[in-house]
Image (tube, rainbow, N blue to C red; front, side, top):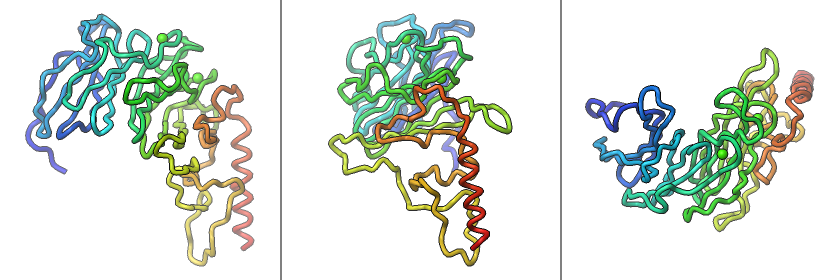
Length: 308
Ligand SMILES: [Ca+2]
Ligand SMILES: [Ca+2]
């Protein structure tokens, strides 16, 4: 890899947290513009950048000249236009850009989530059929440490129709969670976020993931809810050594990608059912109990392998 020429400046002062997506023959870049170095006010802005890196003039996403607290600006494209999402005075809003790069729709954008307290730090992806937006949500407990709360998501179609105005629970209980990112493909989407896990060797934020299978929309081809299953039945620690006649099947193994996780599974993110919502979501059962079960499986398999 090499860079073509010197970096270029674009946009004005006090730019924060850019995001970018391929757009036409170039790029669409979003970021938040803080009004001054110590202001709590920010505007969501974007610009088009040519393939060679030449930027156009930055534009406000919310074109009413707002004094809103806008932040967490992110963008995804659907191969034609783009959807820009951001946190706006504690709600999540969105606005479309058409294939010419022009903003469309209401000058204030449209509401994606407007629950009580703050909804913030949204991410957006295009799954081939619809946009999927996920964010951190303080509707239930707004006093958690900054950046952490619950995680919710919804779909937004190309007309701006929000699939679940209340938001679909991704991770909502009294444990801090946030920093969600989402990716989509072939009518499916996957979420990753951080969640405080109270497990050995020490309580810490760890990644969680949940998967939303094809929801039976027009492109549904009978998705089973298992992404890109390769039929892997290997167990943790499997080295594939010489003489091995076949991997030992783990009871309940679905062949999902989390099977490759090398360490003991202490999260419940793989407990995703076809609703696309983690079974853990909405419960306050914590994470206890799972490690002992996982260890029992690992130890049982290890014993079986030694006996062969
Ligand atoms: Ca709100
Ligand atoms: Ca939570």
